[in-house]
Amino acid sequence: MTTPFYERLTTAQRNNDSLVCVGLDTDPSRLPASLKSRTDAVVEFNRKIIDATHDLVCAYKLNLAFYEALGDRCWDTIHRTLQYIPQEIVTIGDAKRGDIGNTATMYARSMFDDYQFSATTVNPFMGKDSVAPFLVDPARGTFVLALTSNPGAKDFQYLRFNKKPLYEHIAARVKKWNTKKNCGLVVGATRPRELQRLRAIVPHMPFLIPGIGTQGGDLRSAVRYGCDKQGMMAVINASRSVLYASAKDDFADAARDAAISLRAEINILRAKYFKK
Amino acid sequence: MTTPFYERLTTAQRNNDSLVCVGLDTDPSRLPASLKSRTDAVVEFNRKIIDATHDLVCAYKLNLAFYEALGDRCWDTIHRTLQYIPQEIVTIGDAKRGDIGNTATMYARSMFDDYQFSATTVNPFMGKDSVAPFLVDPARGTFVLALTSNPGAKDFQYLRFNKKPLYEHIAARVKKWNTKKNCGLVVGATRPRELQRLRAIVPHMPFLIPGIGTQGGDLRSAVRYGCDKQGMMAVINASRSVLYASAKDDFADAARDAAISLRAEINILRAKYFKK
Image (cartoon, rainbow over all chains, first blue to last red; front, side, top):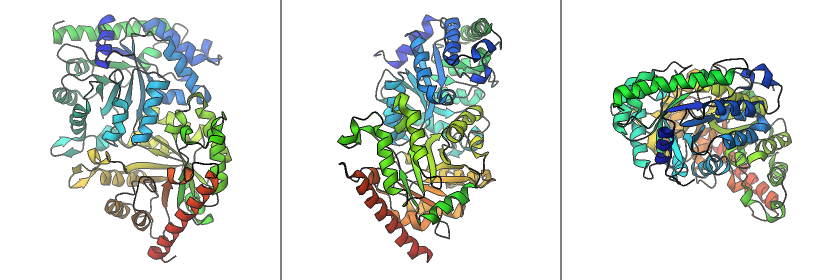
């Protein structure tokens, strides 16, 4: 894996004409009855979702919390899921790690060398030396949390220092750290004005935008301000609205329909704002 | 496990007359030659360290990064290590998780229900709903990152909002979240004045203090300002300076000597500042 990360991402977006990322946050308790009894139920479910959507997405994102909850099957389930994803699709290990230098190095090794994710998410709270170990390889992307889509985002992310909220300070710092062009930001889609301000600070950086679908984010703003000037670089994640579009055995067909709709909605907005 | 967390911690501190926490951040590449070839080398090393130190500590802390780097042996290694730790000693799963509500719930389940740690560390960046799922059970402790001991702490933790640095805002918030008396703070020992200010904001809360030993923190300040008025509630962590006190087969004896010295140094300071 040696293609620079930004190139890898834009190639994936062009190939499938898609900014959609499907979040494989597979909850064993929400699997259809026909799969539930299998010991590899999560792998089987993920494979069917991947079969049904791999020509419609630029990325898959695995939130590691859902896999760690599987206990001793965690490692194997992640590996087998990743092996099934076509090489040209970006894989994001959503772990939001943040720890001091030598520990961050261990986490980076785990995400990139062991699991072989093409990108990950990190928490910037502990500063540069907690993020730097993730930025060593230009082929591996790192999305730094800037502004999140949950209610608790208000507790600290909006605190203002020199008239600018914390998340803008983070964006400005990440811009400096981005010497290998492999940084991105995580930006909650539910906050359009903030998205616009952040895009102004880092015009070319990929934005991973959760909060679409079940969380109720604003898709219009996600496209308009989440994209760069070419209408690219936004990675718009939907998890539950795709995975659980149907709770029955037709879940894969329903997931495909949901992904087709989301891609189309996004592409209509891209055509409108970016004259594609 | 139903004893309230603060009581559990102070009982452990009293039983062994110790504020020492040994960080079982076991790096396979640093094991003595006689263990290296074994497939369960990390478990075996941890057991010998526990045998040598369990009457000298109030807690053991496992940094999960070191275990995740073991790949498919992660889960088993953590479980077997925890099973070997005497019930009355506090176990801290140092994972610094931080994610939105439903994901935080998965992480909390993993730390407390699956691994059965008696406490964990969390990252407050995403705010209250990312921390709340960890605070459900009064018997399980949660140490929230406030001020860390690494150089990158300066990047964001010292930014001032309304004349107070971010870490003081965090301490004030955690004080409000602490309705079940199971919250603590992670406070880097290398910054004595900040430790003093934080202790003034939350006079009774446990402080997990890393940065002693290899990281070069100031032990005097850690004791003087890290403790409550009874000379308790500071949990002073040392990892490498204990684990790797000797690189040879006498590592367990050397670890015991290092733990004895650290406990004694701390207790001399406690006697001085708290008239024990």
